[in-house]
Length: 307
Image (cartoon, helix red, strand yellow):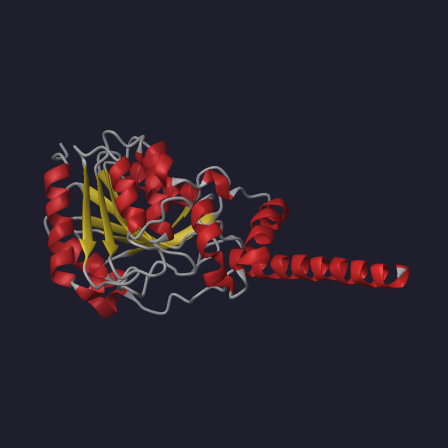
C-alpha cells in the first residue's frame, strides 16, 4: 500500500514539474517572439522622401529604429502634426495586415508627418524581450520625445494596432503632449485577456497551464501583466480624444474590448467605429477608403490648429 501511495505521489509530483517546465518554455517563447525582417521599403508604396531614424526608449535607453516621413518633403501641405504608428505583437513597423505603409501614404497626402518604428525586440530595434505593452509604453514615449526634441512646435497623434493600440492608450495617459489617439483593436486588460485567451496562443489546455504561465513568467522575467490595463488609462484621458476602431469579426481580441473601453471614456472626446465583418486589425484592408475618411475626419474635428 505504501508503495502505491509513493508511486502515485511521485507521479503527481512529476506531472506538476513537467507542467511547470512546459509552462516556462511556452511562456518564454511568448515573451521572445522571433523577429520579422523589415523587408519592404517606403519607395514600394510611392513614398520617395524619408529619413532612417534612431532614438532611445524613455527610461532604459534601448535604441529603437524607424522611418520619418515629412508631408512637406513629399510635396504635401503641412498640418503641423506628426502621427506616430505603434505596431502589434510579434510584428514590426510594417504591420503587414494593413499594410502600414499604405496607410502612411494616405495620411501623408492629408498633410500629416508620419513616424513608423519598431518596438523593442522587433524589426531593427534593440532588446530581446516583448512585454505586450508594459515596457513598450516607454518605447512609444521615446518616439514622442524624439519628435518634440526635433520639432518642438508639432502636435502629436498616435495610431496603434492591437498591442500597439493598448500601448498608445497607456502612453497617452502618461504624456500630456499627445493630442489624440486612434486605437485599432486594443485589448481591455492584459491580465484579463491572458486569463481568457492564453490557451489560444499556446495551444495548451487552459487548466493548469494558463495559471502556471501567469504565475511563473512574471516571476522569471520580473514583469507584471497586472500593470497593463488600458481600461484604467482611458479614464484619465479627459482632454485627449480617442477613436476606437474594431472589427466585429475579430476572434483574436473580440470587439467588446473596444466597446468596453469606449464606455469608460469621456464621451465628449471619444468615438467608436465597429466595422462589420472585419477580423483582427483588418478594418483598413476591408474598407480602406472609409477607414482613411474616418481617421481623417476624426483628426480634423478633434485636433486644434497648430500655431
